[in-house]
Length: 527
Image (cartoon, rainbow, N blue to C red; front, side, top):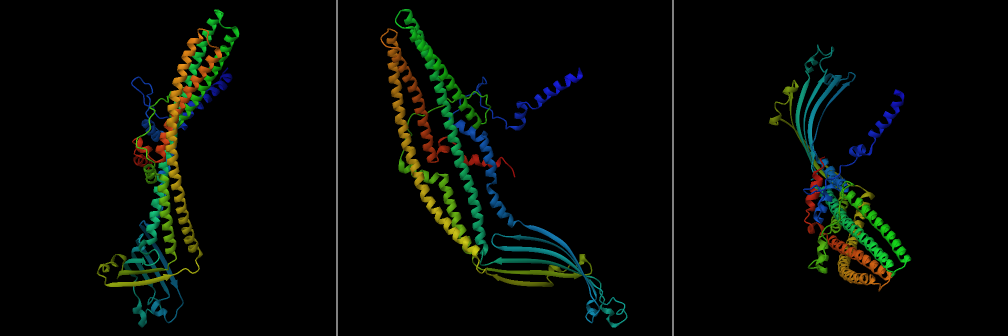
């Protein structure tokens, strides 16, 4: 009995361990909470609320925040070359030689030990500074050997001597990268690259927001299609009932009832298809907003039906030229190309470095007494050095200069092309907006006419004046007009958003401080 229970317990335990709920709780980002009213029902979100919700909870935005945090990588790595360096060390050496005449004075066994500690720093101006403190201990067996201890050279014998020193070294480049000529440009290029990444993120977020708004409106269209399909099914059933009544009066045939039964089945299939499409669009939107798939989100929101005031092509094109992130990035790219050319030209110059070292020393029997007179400069030591070098036949620098000139020319051509493209996008956005508004007016007028025609036809059909085919065509026309009006209304609002996107005015339209949003994204991840 116990053996038969063990496999069953193992099976149910595995189900509990590997159930989807457990995997979701441990491996998937938690869903965002949807605002609810006092009764706990999901509230209808405005477009401004949707945008803020996406920027705060969208998983793609969360991924982008890591990239924006890393945008200063090049600049910080470049600046790391100028971090102060603290170091030190111990060295020891010993030299043993044969006896010669000079060994009487120097000894045949010499030793030297050095302890040192330093702080050094390179500056972006091409300056190098080093401060070092050292203690050198020197000892030899001069005058200590057996042959010399009883001779006149026994006086050469001395105890070990310590030399304490504090030295300052300063170097400066005067031609290549003179006073940081190239380094200032390298630092600025790194900052420009970080700014370009921020601008690219701004544009990416704008496109994400617009896509979310379009998805939200498409969900509204899908819900409208469900309502239309439901209305069409109810009307078909109503007409079928009217046809059944007419048959009892001898005004209709049995095959006419069968025809409306078939139309009712088709309408039920259309309704199921509309519901399926709505649910798919809802799931896509819930994924973008990082909401639970079970959330009953509705696409109902405010839709604009009027053209924005003050549309002016020249002013809008000028506004787009000032605000578009892609144009700003291209301008920064051109600046980087110019600075890259300046750096390449500067690298072809000779390197001339002037440097020097000043040290103040003192001597003592022990290490702790070898620094007593260092502060008085009693035993100074000076060293000055002028170095010059020039690369001969350096093809690398020539190629860098050539490539920088080519990149600059390419950037100018790309700027001309992009400016024309931006102007065309603004023109197309205005044309699409005007056309969509005209189509919306026609769709509203067509729906009004078709509904009046259908109501009149339905009344006369009950009196036997019109055929079922005419009534069915009128009903189809009403359904098509409803769908056409919903699509026209959504398309008009999409054209309004694209008009704002072409001018990069989406954030201003919905009162979003995108710089603040990006700053919060950057600050939400620590180093």
